[in-house]
Length: 348
Image (cartoon, rainbow, N blue to C red; front, side, top):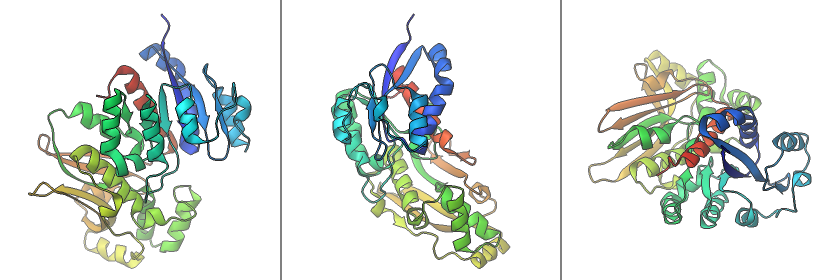
């Protein structure tokens, strides 16, 4: 029997997109045999490396080679592809659009427009971009439902850790009452290094050297990335309708090595903690700020680039998930898991 064909268009082909392409090449035959599913990348559009499409499936090895040597994708295209993203989304030969462009934590654009356009054109959507969920989750969820299409986003928080599928399928009849988490790898790495006596500026340089901090690390250091992730979780899990600027936010710029040393002497570690609670009036309050966490708290022991979240629920009380030292390949896995769940109908 011929496997079901799933045609996928990638909006963006940066580190995560290329990691996904490599993962799909490695897992392609296993997915065919295990799920009776043939996933093909039939379109890719980038900001700087052009665009290509082929209804039969692009040559991923050639696409990876072209982009990694600084070339253009257009030579791989079966016919000329639009270089304007919204036109590409509207016309691409794909069943699923995967949005993996760079996040703008203050606007959520252009990713939100990309997701909206894909759903309106009748495509399922998988996104690793947090912006659409932080700025327009309710609208996009209802748009997907009205079109009978999937809108999945496993890779938006804690890379490929199965946060959303766990709650969606593994916690039926359960309400999330609140959570506490460490969600930004860059600040956790910086604080870990500062606790070892390294000055703030040097810790930032080390984070940039290993590729987890941008040339301008403000979005991480000032708490914007953590605030966006906090909004995503609150909006999806707790029916909040928060925006990042509604999160009480304090970054780590004011933290000094001596502050971390003093906290350690008191049996605590300073962490950038994301916390959300529902008040007695039903309102959801979200906060991102440095916190001196007692050593008996699991959050105190998550170091380096690792992340952690503790859910408080009305059924299992507390449930904690820890992700150790994530890499782009783990984010790529979240995308792959979402695509398989789209094909299996596990998205309602």
